[in-house]
Length: 499
Image 1 (cartoon, rainbow, N blue to C red):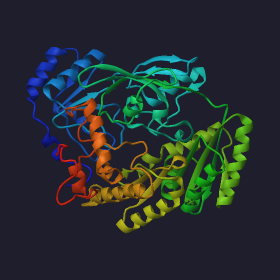
Image 2 (tube, one colour; image 1 turned 45 degrees about the vertical axis):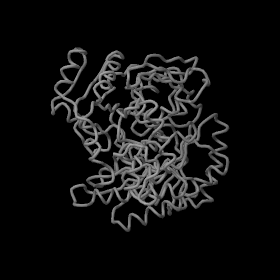
Image 3 (cartoon, helix red, strand yellow; image 1 turned 90 degrees about the vertical axis):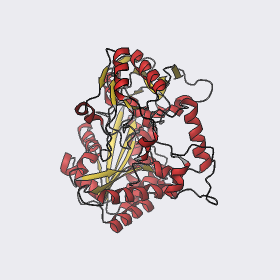
Image 4 (cartoon, rainbow, N blue to C red; image 1 turned 30 degrees about the vertical axis):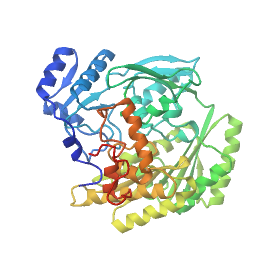
């Protein structure tokens, strides 16, 4: 059994009379777009982690809140699991459907309901593309800060579900820092509102709890996001290095100098060559690593910060430092970085994109360790980092048609995530856990912590029907994975259900 996908999950779910369910939904919701033929289901069999595919039992594409509420009530009554899907660009299998479940696709909820330039907020439906929010706010001199590389396609609902980041999140925060409120439907079809347009709300911060919960607690139907004024000036410095460890050290040196860049990104030689061949961004293909450092704000501050960062780069041993001449070249520098993932895809039949977070001080050590893993296992690894906040994206190149290479790529990926935990980091920074990292959750959290996770899940979804089998491992799974100690053959917390 490979470590990413557990075939036993569907076996643990109750069987439902599929034809009876279809007939019931068609009678109750005659206007609902319901897909059930195999050729219609096939496009929904995976998210961005395309190596793992499951054909869902049914796919629903609702257009009204009433349809969603009715769907959820029916699934609750019939015991049908529900997986919510946005644009399907997620990279951890979070929207991987279930063979015995309904896939709830929110792509038709794609309206920007309001842009309030005075309050600096926008109210949007979950199917709105990330970039579309900034496009709608641009006439008012505003923008939405979190900018995943997939922002042209990914939906804001999925961003909230995974707590997505982006190249500018070092200074402006992740999704959780830029969402003010969310309307949610529970599995029973009950409507609740989390957060508000005010600075703070009383009680537990349930909005933060839902952000990153991967569709396990409820279905988000509306989101209120913060908008920021477009900076007066933005400049980008690109520094080249003849050693990746020098580049890694420079990252920490910039923060230590008191500079918080708008973005601070790192690419190693393999990623540089791929991006340059793909985008022609003007990257130095002979460099072992480059850093892109964007500084934004008012003219005087940006000028001073550029000089400070240039000095840090020189002290760290940069072989070349370039300041983007104008906004056009600045955009080109970023275009290469944002196209790094598809660019690397041209270098091998397949690649496996990892997502972990480490303390900045550990960057040189982790880069060296990844190079050793690459050499030991014979798989090339291209490294792309949100270096400023320690969020790394090693891209493991392999050929899925070669026997054993997918399993080998999984093994290398798992070891990289465990390395992140060892140095004081996390197994995810923005892609979420999904199915991909569920075993590594056992390495990061102890039994008591996992028990609390299950208790939170049960408070919102006592029957475990919302996106089951994702994000939170069972203690039995952790014991099987070998990441949890078993005393005298007995698992801790025997009251928990075992699958």
